[in-house]
Image (cartoon, rainbow, N blue to C red; front, side):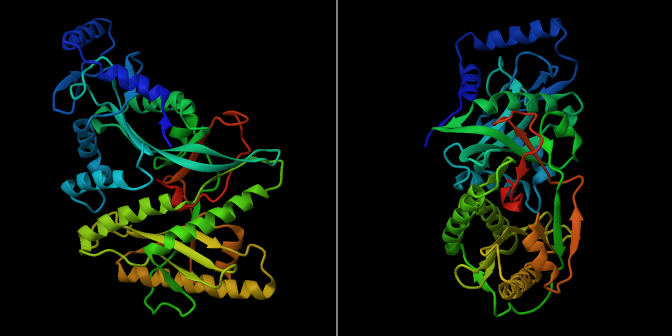
Length: 428
């Protein structure tokens, strides 16, 4: 389905109109702006390495627009030190292209943006900030208990060149995003908000209108040697579409039966999200180890009473380094039977234990230092607590802080919105 980005098209059109006099016009614009005091003395580079006067963040001619391939590569080169993880720079640039081909990114599902001067020519304009947006499906329940499916946008990779920071460009970039995202829609589905995960604490994005959620926790397990328990079976890549289809059906039913009186939102746990994570995982593992993980998770139990976990291997540093941050993330933890009898609960405890032990063994095999399960539900917490496994509960205060800007029913001031299943799969 084609996506309509009215505001984006307008900005892109402005930026890409080139006439025989455009270069002269652009130079005259810079000269006039400098005379008006809009540019301090600092310089910003364009995609070719050229220097430009650094505009003030409040300059009226700044806009968000889609970068050229040269500009996008320049952005990735700048951000490599922050997000390159275990990859070399050439591998990081290769990965950035690779990820544009996964389902979540295709057909404008992922869009890259730069903050720049609309009067300057492509590849010759300053790159003041950058980010990505990801289109996501979301189930929404209003206070009357009515459910709808809408579109929400994930904001990722917000970046300002370190030499340009503390000048207001990050704030201007967020201001521009807040202005244009409400105008986007996909067919009959409208955009009702945007989410992001802050790695700089709770205050910065909060002051720009992205309300942080009070619960940002996870539970951690240590890796542990041992065979995969008999209860648990590996989830293979070919199993993911059906499992995600089953999960989506259960999520839809669960949301539709929510009691009225409170608004709720859930990012749909579809296979596109899982494939984005596993595609990133496989790219890194192929570069590091020359092979990719076959297990995408573990499952136990019979249809109707199954429990499963979908996981992903994340390498923030090469395994041969002294890093302790490489992690097996459980993207999604699913319990089919949400109202078990006491006898069924005992089976669930054994199934959950077997799945988590499989995760611990997987972490050992792939040189990962911990296993993290985000935002466990009360039922998941209950079976984990009774499993006998050692674990730690962690409250995140600085990193991966879930934040949402809402412009659906009730508007930006809506305080009682509940984010259901704020699990790692939605982090993209």
